[in-house]
Image (tube, chains in turn orange, green):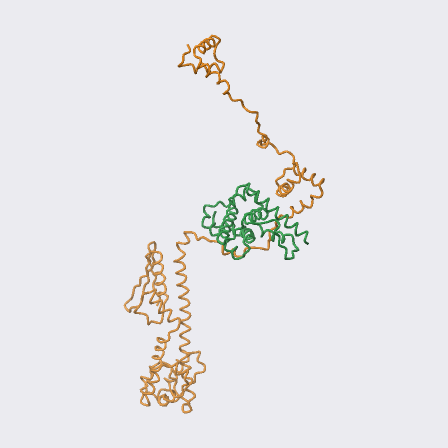
Length: 373
Length: 161
């Protein structure tokens, strides 16, 4: 039953053609009785939209189908040329392009120019610092032992260098002292004298009866200093030598004064003819030590530093010799410091204070080595 | 990538990246610096880089380092600054490649880089896009404009000569 409260649904159904003939007759009676609602229904028939006949013209461009043959013209010629040299055309398009060029010979030059735009790399240009770019990794296992190994190797090399230079420095010191005396030969008053270079003790009271001893001294000197071929051998009594010590000083050239220490020169000045030979015989060893202390060689300096820094032996800095055991101890100390290990070299002394047995001890193994005398 | 593979990259690609960079910056020292920088960055990240993609990574790093350099030096050319008629031919050229490289110097950096990557290295549009950070369409447009300029340049030169 249609009323004023539900007429909208009846109207929509009527417009949609869903009412039966009986319902339509009921609706018509309702509209006669309600004229205002009849006017409302009258305009509703024009509100239905009708779709326009619009179509999308570029449907083909959206479809994934093989491209059609090219349609070449002046407008797209450049673009097609570039596509051709870039390899963007398919076989059919290439053929179409070639046909176009055949029929338009005036375009061949243009295409030729495009074809020339391909750049060729200059292979003479090379990066010459490749080695600076390269990287090398040290494996962790190797890295663990690298630093200690380098430390030990450095210690061994240092030991060899010190050992060699030590031997050389000994020879050079001896040569230097011999040369100093050789200059003495410029004195006219001294033609013959005993060789006072050796450090053996000679008593002044035995000056005239020491023929045999002098011969022994000469032999000792020759044996000890085989390189001193130019040292003159003197046979005159030692007193003559002592009397001429002052002359020795006077005859020294300045360069040689620099080589002898001042203490020696002062000593010879004060000594005069009453100089006791017992004391005089000690001159050269003293000089030698003074020179060594005040003007140490590179090797001596190195040994001193090794004792001081690596071996912590402040009390033994004046010792000139450096044994293999010293170097080994330094190397082991360095190794322990770097690796945190506790490797020890222990020494056992005999009653005379000499090292008798060496013991090498580490966490994993140990061995004992008797020292040869 | 291992250290060994990294060193292989040095042997294989350093010349090629160097050529690419040198042609772009036109300064040997700067090119050397960029190569050093690129390889240093590669080394820092070498454990995360796939060996197969090392060449692309190198070119990309070098390209961006180069662009940073241009920006710092305020030398980055305006895209529209190059005029096709802006030809300089005061010098004598006997070799086409030489003429082309001369013309190359007149191109904006973007165009120059993509054309170098295309011709020197034979990279695809997609690869060039990955290296330069451009999309494929931009790469195509840059290559098109670069070729068009080069063609006009050498055409003009041939007319003059």
